[in-house]
Structures are given as C-alpha cells and as structure tokens.
Amino acid sequence: MVNFAFGFEFPRPMGPLVELIDPIVPQTYSILNDKLQTFLDHRRKVVYVAFGQLIVPKPSEIKLILTALLENMETKHIDGIIWSTLGIQEHFPDIINTRTNTTYDINSFFTNPADNSNIAFVNWAPQVAILHHPSTCLFLTHGGAGTLYESMHAAVPIAVFPYFSDQPATAISAEEHGTGRWFKRTLSQDQATDLIKEIIDDTAGKYRHNIGRFKALVQIRNAHCKQCGADLVEVIFTHVNGKLEHRRDICRDFCSSKHTTWIYIRLYWFP
Image (cartoon, rainbow, N blue to C red):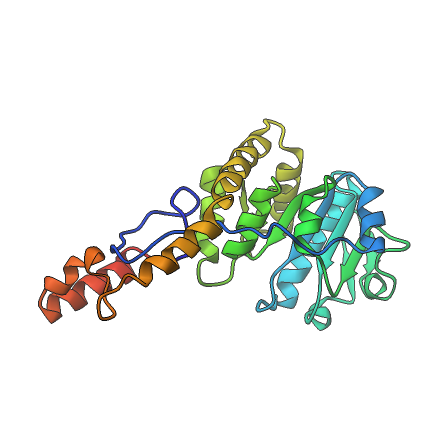
C-alpha cells in the first residue's frame, strides 16, 4: 500500500502487488490556540511557513524567504506571517534589510511573536487548523506528500521550497497543475519577492481555480482511502503459504538477471 495516487503525482509502472490508497488526510486535528486564533481572525492574507520535522533550512535560505515575505507585507500584499520555527531559531539572521531600506530586528519576533507585530514565530503549529482558516492564503512548504494533500484539502495554494526525496517532484507538480510555484533557492531576492506576490495576487484566478478542483479530488478519495486500506489488509489474509497467488507478479517468471534488470529500470528510469 502506497500513499500515492495518479493525478496528484507523476505516473509510473507498478506491479500487481502495489495498491495506491492516498490521499489520506486527517479528519480530526488539533485546534488553534487562543493566540493563533486571534492572530488569524484579525488578518485577511496570512502566509504559513513550515518545513516539517527533518528539514533545517540554511541561513541564506531563511533570509531569502523571510525577506520576500517582509517585502510583500510592506506592499500590503500580505498582512501576516506564521512560521513554525521549532529547532531552527539559531539559523535566522539577527536583522534583515528590505528594498525599502527598512531594518527588521528578527530576534524580536521570537521574544514577542504575535502580540505586537504581524509576524508569529511559533514552536508548535496546528498545521491543518491553520490551513483551514480562511485567512491563510499561501502555504510555503518543503513539499512533502502529506503537506501537499493537506494544502489541497484546505484549498490553499503552495510555494514549494524542496530539498530531497519526492519534494522536487512536488514542486514540478505544483507548477504543472497550477496549484502553486516552485520557489527555487537560485532566485534573486527580487524574483523571490515577485513569486510570492504573483501567487497571492492570482490576477487570472488560476491558482484559486486549480486548487479548488484538487480540493474536490482529495475530498472524494479521502472519503474511502482508510476503508480501502483496511480491505486490503483483509485480502492479505487470503494468502496461500504467504503468497497471493491471484496477484502473482509476472516478473517471477523471468530469469534472475532479467528480473533484476527490470527492477532497476523501475527504480531509475521512472523515479
């Protein structure tokens, strides 16, 4: 069973023992605490930034992203930022200068994160609840599969800043499906700022339309995915001496060298 579905990610060859059961999105989730609830309720266009538990952005990457967000805040394209900063606080710069020659004391966002500013740096963020709040207009993410489906389920466009594994593919997918943009680390500061602005403005309505369509697709599949997974577990119990004879892979009829070659073709030609 694989947390994957054609249409959300790129197609690839599969054997008869592979079943696609995603996207599985939590139907119950942690609610917003009082500070975050108030923060979101008093704003209209908030960008949520989170890179998961394994990603540690470089200081230069944080500076590129945060400067782009602050410059969009100065031009009133956004009016709030929530950043999940657990484990990465020491990688933030002390100060940031924007193109309006405004200097920001970044340490102040940590010491008094949400009370007197439009920036909330938080150690813990109820991600699904934040995404489902109507004021959240953009999700800036590393692009893991789980975050992709959560953003689609909440109809929030994404800016993907990928690192490894399936994340670059998620960035490409967002571009091709029109649900977001690939935030490349090679962008200049002006290009990064304009990328955020373009998604937020969405003058042609492209992102709003496409993310709404994928929201419906995620909701349709999510309604049955868990039951499908449970049914597949029961199918496994029909095995004969540990084998599902009715789903026998034809590769087992190949000689060992041909079988191994086919495995490598699957792995490297269809990543």
